[in-house]
Image 1 (cartoon, protein in one colour):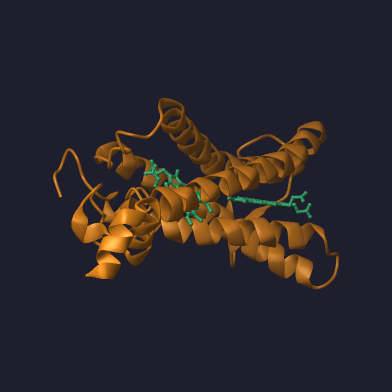
Image 2 (tube, rainbow, N blue to C red):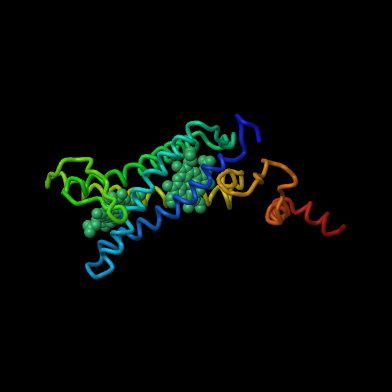
Amino acid sequence: MSRTNPTHFHLMLRLLHWTMAVLILAMLFIGISMVSTDGPAYPVLLALHRPIGIALLILVCLRLAIRLATHIPPLPADLPRWQAQAAKSSHVLLYIAMAGVPLIGWAMLSAGGYPVKIFGDFVLPPILPQNVYLFGWLRLAHTVAAFAFFALILGHLSAALIHALIRRDGVFEAMTLTRKRPAEHSTDNVTTLDFENQQLRNPQARSRSHSN
Ligand code: HEM
Ligand code: HEM
């Protein structure tokens, strides 16, 4: 793997990507379940939601630092310009959401005058003065930002699946924990499906191979 043109994201970035993806999806469902109940599950879910959210805020700072200090794999040269631009912009938005949603959560509890309890007696200091109007706005902002984040993740997941299953251009593998990234147009990368596709596109080749 060359230092300036790597085939994979840095191992730490890949580990952080998948750990954070699991935690973020869990947080979205914990958040929705939390506001849908006023039963005994509420305090349990809230006690999970706060520390995981703050842990994600710390992890995104670490991830950003590693991201800025390392080289990342280039996108395939044949990717249309608008798709490459869309990929870059959506990644920036994902980073903004990963930092913004938990920050709004912390700010919202601060403005509401609620303690941001992490575990045991460990409580984070408020980051905003107590203000009921601000609390109202931030409460709404947390919901809107969390749902926008979810929509962004669905778009990102669709793009990742197009790379993995349709284009099969190595973009997906760049973020996986495997070492192999299929080189474009390399013959050792031809799968059974590729072979079948070739046969369908070129029936003469098929008849030749059948007659052999
Ligand atoms: C990536 C991080 C986070 C995600 C994805 C997330 C997501 C959510 C979602 C989806 C809801 C439900 C919104 C609704 O339907 O109205 C919610 C509510 C909430 N979140 Fe977060 N959140 C995150 C971080 C945080 C943090 C760091 C805190 C505080 C330290 C926090 C505190 C709250 C509170 C207090 C509620 C509302 C509970 C209620 O109204 O009963 N969240 N969050
Ligand atoms: C759930 C929350 C997720 C978040 C917040 C997230 C965030 C990101 C970000 C910010 C990047 C850009 C990497 C960088 O520049 O540092 C990225 C890349 C990537 N993600 Fe995700 N991701 C999530 C889930 C997923 C899922 C579920 C998949 C696939 C099933 C996926 C597949 C990929 C792939 C293949 C790349 C590399 C794309 C490229 O090189 O352009 N991600 N992700």
